[in-house]
Each structure stands twice: as C-alpha cells, then as structure tokens.
Image 1 (cartoon, rainbow, N blue to C red):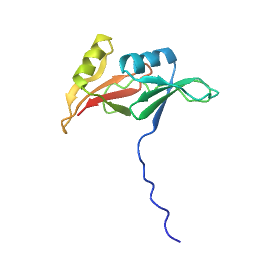
Image 2: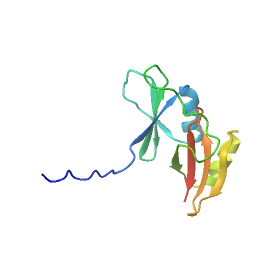
Image 3: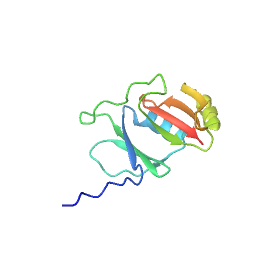
Image 4: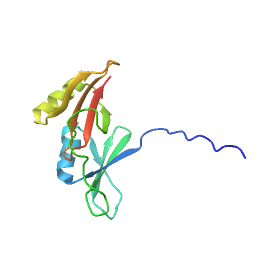
Length: 132
C-alpha cells in the first residue's frame, strides 16, 4: 500500500474569532482597518464576516456554544496573534492614533526589514499590521 499523498495547503481561508459586541467589532475591522463586510450564510448563531484580501475574518457573537470571547488583551507582541499586510504601516499607525486606539507595540522594523505594529481589537485579540 503506498503512502497517502501529502497535504498541500494552498492559502489561509479564514480566521474565526468570538466577540462580545458585533457593532464594536465591525467598527474596528471595517471603519478602522478598512475591511469590507461580506454576506454570511444563515447560521443559527449571530456573527459577521469581513473580507481581508483573499482571507475572511469570521466573527461569532459569544453564546453558550461558542466558548468565551476574546483572548484577553495581550500586553506585548509575543502572544497569539494574526497579522494583516498593509500598504504602509506608518500610515496605518497614524490612523490608529487618530481614532485613539492604544498600541500594544508601535511601528518598529523587524530584522527582515518589514515594519510592524500591534493593537488589540475590542475583545483583546492581538492584531499585527505589517508592511514590507
């Protein structure tokens, strides 16, 4: 019997996060980060979907069957996080400052030359924005 073929991941399809407030989450991902809210199938639980380039962000409103919202606000950039590529991290930082959102870590250069910053979304999920 020959071994099963290797799995070959093609891309990240979506990330799912549990949230406490759909409106606050929408403000963060759409109004601040500029994602587009897209139609969501008629699940039996509340949530919303946002398009981030080819990747979707699925949100689920916290309920008995979802597990707890958020991951607890992370105070440094070394925690579990997800990252979004942006055109200009410094311009993104200006927008973050304009809306009064505190940085977990302000823009800095990584050893590979990319610029990155970290913020928490309304539920404490650690979000990285980076530009190459």
